[in-house]
Length: 249
Length: 308
Image (cartoon, rainbow over all chains, first blue to last red; front, side, top):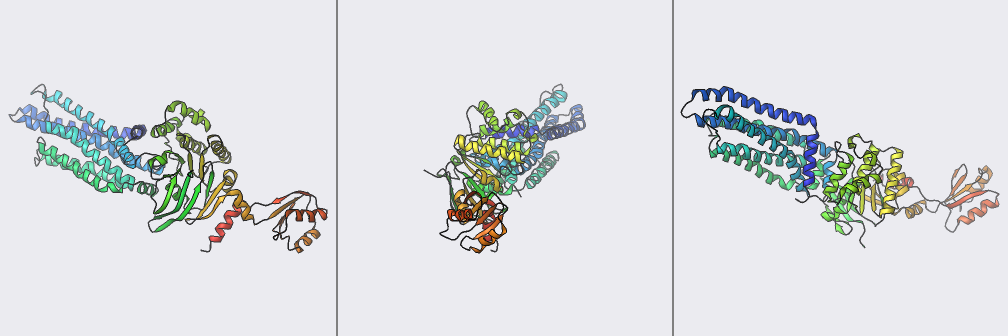
């Protein structure tokens, strides 16, 4: 992976220079996370705290966890949704990718660098949004009544597993986009966020799956692993020839 | 010593189509090698093979003795591809700095200025590449290609879409590069005039096959088939023209206002024609063996293969 540092930093800088996209992705991520946090806080958390029921803590952990999980998904998900396909389409059509391939850089280094360049800003946003949700909800509702609440499994899922899933999605998207059509890659990444969000929130809030247990963390890890396996299966497609020939299609 | 670029019996099949049908040529060090051919002939595929972007179906391709698939081979090559690959939202400096870092060129700051100066873009160093004209973009792409002091430059139509003054600047830049830095240039171009002006050796590819290959001067002499051109001070009288036409061994082929072109039979020298004309009172301003223009060679070769 020698020499991919410049590709990562330059790609991040280029992605973030696209102001419209930057506004869209930060704006959407923050707005969605805020909307979910407000809804759950005002409609569920506040009444539960007021009721002061004996088994309230585990419920509150679940509600807080839902907010954190959504914040993390929106942060990293929207960033990858917005930047992955657009940067690949642009760079393939303008010959940037073909030029990089003609340098001594390895093809897998370029792939990894491009994937990281889209993933890292999303990771930062996700971690920040999740941390804000955790601290804000605690200090607004919990600390004055019952103290600081945090469930370790939801925290691991939100801070680690969601970014891990999305790192795998970024690798997959870039693999598909580089060796084929960025539009196909775009479709994959666009479908993933609503799909995973609907699935996890339904399973969690309907109590089919206990979001506060290690099962939830394991399922997230499993999803990341499945995406990882797909990446491994598609990896042999990652050749310079395939990328170059797909650039003008 | 190894050739700068060497292709031996290279075949490349894409899908069901054989794009390169066993092509072979060598580019020697210090050459400005013109690579010509119509659209779809296989020029860009050849360039991609040289840059290690496409795998060979068969044959061998090397750069300075190194297989083109080796990273070390690519380190020795600078390139300008059909799409320039510049980042529009980055300045000229940033575009160059990026490649300096990729090639791990030491002390890039001083070098960036020097390289931009060499292509006449020092004053626009802080401007974004997206604001550049086509000619300026091509010069910046050339600067990027030369950033790591490569031994070979591979250029895919570097003057395409550039205005005439921009073309002249780029040509001069290429000549300077070869003369001062001793680099080798592989130049793919549609611009026959450009190739004739700056290249010392050429190859002509058509439908995946090399149709013509060698030193340009030599090829021009060969293709002219020993034609002789005589420039006169005045227009030739009709009566004398009729007489010259009747002398079949001279082979008068073409008459222009103040010049005559002969395709003499074997054994007839230029001096024989000059003596004959001087004896008829014709004032001769110049005479010599005529060299076929690259355009004539190109048309003749492509005409030959057309019926296939």
